[in-house]
Length: 165
Image (cartoon, rainbow, N blue to C red; front, top):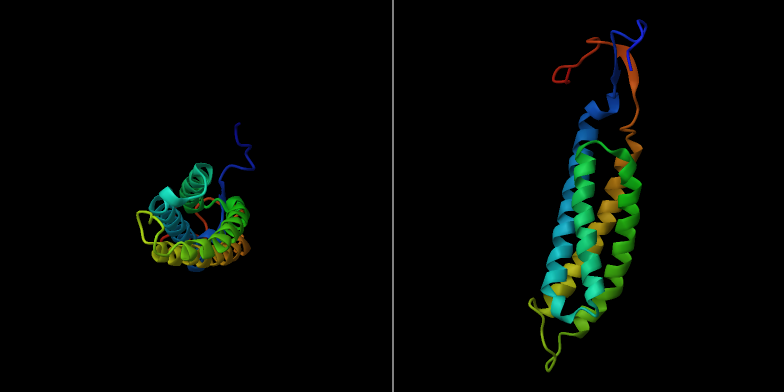
């Protein structure tokens, strides 16, 4: 679609994406997503032999892959994925909180151990719950930063140092 004469010489500018707080929050959300994916993978693989069903293990791996995909979307400034991230984090936090006692209950003599010790898997699951709660908080902070706000301005006008052309 060709630009009209009136639109020529104008560009869309997203002022909230150039703020240091927005850049930092974006990075924090992406890092917490990747940490979550890593923790989910370690707990799932470390306890694979003792998980109640293979379906639950596969679903957890799918959640980890989704978190990696979500991290990519956040790095690309996709603000719309942030509420989905928060909702999935709440769901995983609930599942993790429910499963914590069962890992500690398995740490008894006479029971076969999974690849990682049960106590370690229990502590990692507690850590998963805590990281999910942090993820909810940082995703909602990022959502409030309004990364989607766009302004139209004349081309090349009002650029700050370090801002892309």
